[in-house]
Image 1: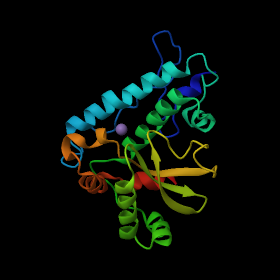
Image 2: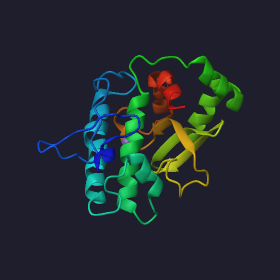
Image 3: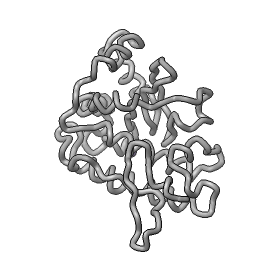
Image 4: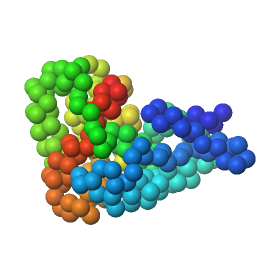
Length: 220
Ligand code: MN
């Protein structure tokens, strides 16, 4: 049954073609218009990022899984099975998962962090401010393209970065097996270059303005 392939845990949308055949992976619609995150994330970047970059990962992922053992797997299951040699699947499945999560965490009207999340962040990092400083530093220190993550590792929270479109669900990156991503930040230049050019610091500052802490808490 290939239906499972159409869903991501956090995007409960299943699409069907005219012939009612399940479509493998689909580009999730955003919950807000492309200009909704202005002035922090500009409209042109959002449109290109979603309708070109993310769409390309979805298209190439569907092409890459054809005639492989990955057909019909949900995205999360697929990510956990990826081998280092499955480069096209690895890059595009990661790209699809990472961006799907990223869009979900952003909002034009971001909610404040619930008390329970603030408490865990303070326990792990000292304070919200200390956490944001550490996360920002990790994002600035990451060389080249990749992602910055806040992950939940059993009860502990930690910050990590991954290169390219890798993510914490790919088991061959990490020894730990039950890591849950809570925050994902895209630090590829395509995410910010039009508006911020080389100023990744300003882009990360803008990210804090549109990060919806309620959505982060829901990931826990
Ligand atoms: Mn991106």
